Length: 195
Image 1 (cartoon, helix red, strand yellow):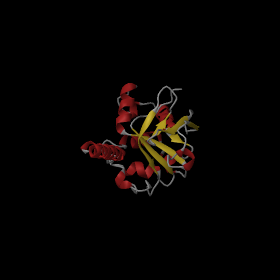
Image 2 (spheres, helix red, strand yellow; image 1 turned 120 degrees about the vertical axis):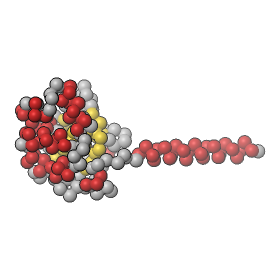
Image 3 (cartoon, one colour; image 1 turned 90 degrees about the vertical axis):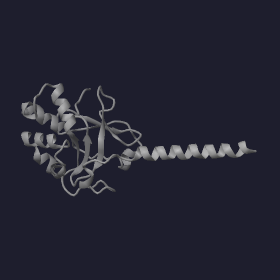
């Protein structure tokens, strides 16, 4: 008689525990970008350049800001969209410089840095909540401001995946921030094209 009541109780406990774990895993860590966006919609009242300039200076987007100044590409980040901007965080830029043996951003040839930044600007709008992308996680090729295409998709958790199906793919750190001229995805890496 007691077994009959214990099994449903254990089953209920297991289901509730699993549901709690799923909910906890969906909660995003606090990022320094949250204070500048409307948390429910991800909207930012300004351009991508305004967003970059408003980011907190410590270990965030200061290196991408510096790279934009070095290359003189401010207009690409402030002009009307639609554009998708992939913004590498400072650790990604540091790793790129270490791998390529550059002591600083100013040591990178301006033409190389310009092409690198242009590759991070997509000439289209890619937001994972857009109905045309919700059902599909197949990589879609897009033209960038640079000379190579970029492939955008998302995984089952709706995290943006860059260059899925090539030699090196990248999962975005924070996605779907919406400035007035497009959408921003913040990457932990400097994204490169490796067909």
